[in-house]
Image (cartoon, rainbow, N blue to C red; front, side):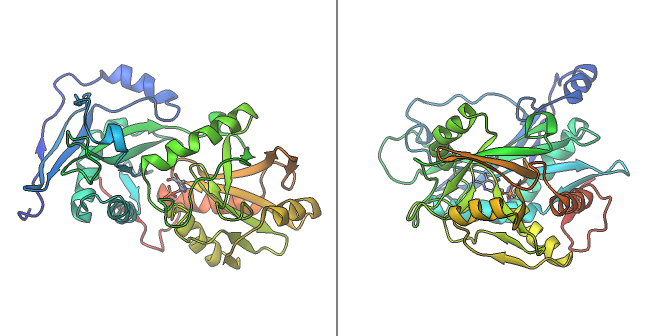
Length: 363
Ligand code: PLP
Ligand code: COI
């Protein structure tokens, strides 16, 4: 490793979770509740740059009450998965895209940019050490790289110190019970992001701002919230944690365009590529909520789905709002959604030929 990239110190856990306990946890891990034995930490300071890279036993942090992130939320994160392939190997899906989005998020949040090679090595180090935690079957190991302002200072300016961390958790389906279609709540009162804001960055603050709308969704029996644009409150943008697609009766597909207020999803970009290769015309165009309602009622809109790393591809069956509810198609998803999901998951798990070069085998 060059001086620009610190080499990793590897400290294996002295008392990892016992194999039988781990096996029991892997039976039904849910999402985001079970964690592996290790984590990666890398420090950054203005004077020393990136240094002190370690893969080491997972442990709590001790933070001074004046640590900058606790006050001004200078924090970004990523989400990607490691999959167990049929041949017993381990694969990542487009991890360099996560590395690049992490860099873009860092720039937007006035944080230091982590070199792509260091991001990728951090992932490889953790997955290799915790490979026994990757569930078989439909599960995967969800990786959560994140970085936060660690300087102890209450002035409002970019922090002079940061900590980059990667933790991992074995996961099953994001939506409880692996539902055939999810329902979404249309937020009337709240928006997620405005022009010039941080909508395109994966920063914790975006999610903090979305939680009141997500709580409303849960109160109305919905799985997720769907946000409209902040300027006109008319154009469908995305869900709290997923991008959105619409499938029409002529086989064409539409997804809202990226314009600074939507997270540029890696699944979104992959779905656009796969759908075009399957012969669908895909438009990145704005879609008005009134048109959405009218097309669902007329049957012109056949399917809608949400997509993201955590959710993969999930059909949207019903939209609820203060103006009433409407159903898309028969409310249970449809063929186009199912076929895109099968192809995407097949590529991720090595069952379908990876003709786009998206899969990175690490074991
Ligand atoms: N939109 C939001 C707000 C998200 O949190 C996510 C999840 O990461 C996505 C979209 C989908 O992005 P990706 O497909 O890269 O996981
Ligand atoms: C992901 O899909 O990785 C996300 O960060 C979304 C969140 C809802 C878990």
